[in-house]
Length: 289
Image (cartoon, helix red, strand yellow):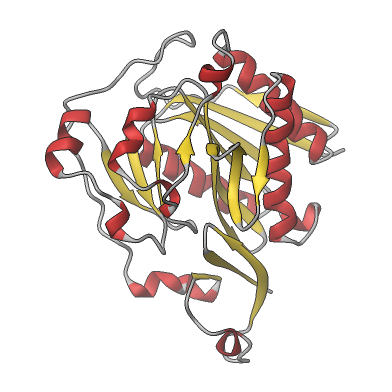
């Protein structure tokens, strides 16, 4: 029986959710828990992946402070993105050895989860060649940024439900210029937050062939809010977390997330890594064999 564990953190500060995600990942690597899907809504935050271009953060300190936006450098692939109220963020912590040892298959399947869920609302969403995420025309409705270590996934997707899209003005989302951003509420004005979450879980169960799922009672207990409200958090000091050191790229030689090292070096017997031939937001994902 393949069982999916679903943890709904509610509204949770990014740093606390990140710690929960890392702890869950470590437990899944040790096979102490089944595949787990963490669902969360964050306060305002910009996150930069390991290969992010700092110039894609165009907001100044005054803007960040006035909007209460925090900044974090994180260990996923990809560039810069926004998380905030009204956006459903999902962190699948899945062991791909129990599914298919293919990062490209995994990312496409997560995209299919969102595409099929949106189709339930009558929204025609699709992929765009060579770009990750889910798109409605030339407007991105869901961003995707992943990391895979020991074939266990972390980080995930961010789906705009009723997000305040003006908060994207402070960045070049995912480093992609010339594309727009949209949300479900602009296309389905009466969309309900709870219904979206339930449909997302149902699609994960269907497309990843889980026999059942169980919902955890665990809650973040930070910045709780009712399911019907999406309050704006303002007047918080921004917090810049320093970039990880270069040593973090190796992390005990368990994984690499790089973008510019020639493939010939990656075939070196010294590194002993398998090249996973897929790009996530223009960042190579490497997974240890």
